[in-house]
Every structure is written in structure tokens, then in C-alpha cells.
Image 1 (tube, rainbow, N blue to C red):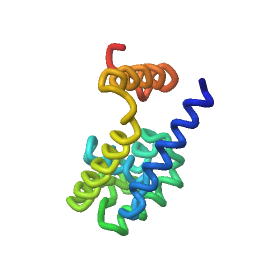
Image 2 (cartoon, helix red, strand yellow):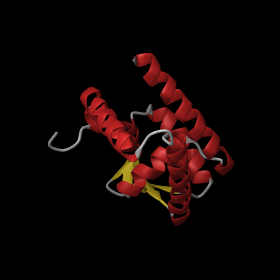
Image 3 (spheres, helix red, strand yellow):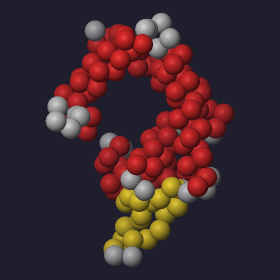
Image 4 (cartoon, helix red, strand yellow):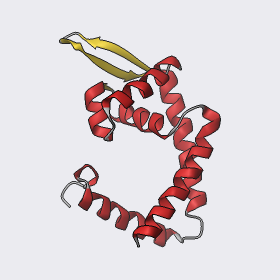
Length: 141
């Protein structure tokens, strides 16, 4: 079973990387943009922790996003040591495009499954993920 999960994970990741390639953005960029969309302003440290990324790796991702005008970093007025990060309007547009591409990959990847099977698969994967990592636990379950 772990081998199959790994193979499926690699296959969908490869398809996402390929779909995102023309945008000049990758999966880490997508994750940061999506997180900032949900939590409009965050510190670099809280973003890294929420995504499970090494903080030094996140700095590089943020540098790339800032270069493209997708995020903005500013010093926290309450603590000058901290950088606050927020999504720009251009970042919102990029996130919309990446989400569209991800949905297309998702639909194509899961095409062999019926709607009911897709729902069951998502539920089982969410349960497994929540069991092994509290960040993926659903409230009350």
C-alpha cells in the first residue's frame, strides 16, 4: 500500500509541476499564495511553520514571489525584526490561475473514478492525513 500511495503522489506531483511550469511558478509558490489568501498577513516564521518549510527555504520562495510582484514584505511596526508578508492583487490573480490549473490536473488525474469514489478517496486520504499530522485534522474529528 505505501508503494502505491507514493507512486500516485509522485504521478500527480509531476503533472502539477508540468501544469504550473508555463506560469513560472511552482508548488511552493502556490502553497504560499494560498496560505496568504486565507490569512492575509503573516510573518515569515508563521508561514514557514504553517507549511512545514525550512525558514531559509521560505525566504527564497518569498524572494521569487516578491520579484514577480505577487507578495509584499514589510517590517512589522510592533517588532522591527519581523517581516510581515501579504498578497498583492497580482498575487491574487496568479493564485486564481494556479488553482484553475490544479483543478484541471485534479479532474484529469481522478478521471477514472466516479464522483462517489472521488468523494470516498478524499475522505479516506483526509482521515489518514489528519491522523498522521494534526495540521490536517478536521475540527471535531
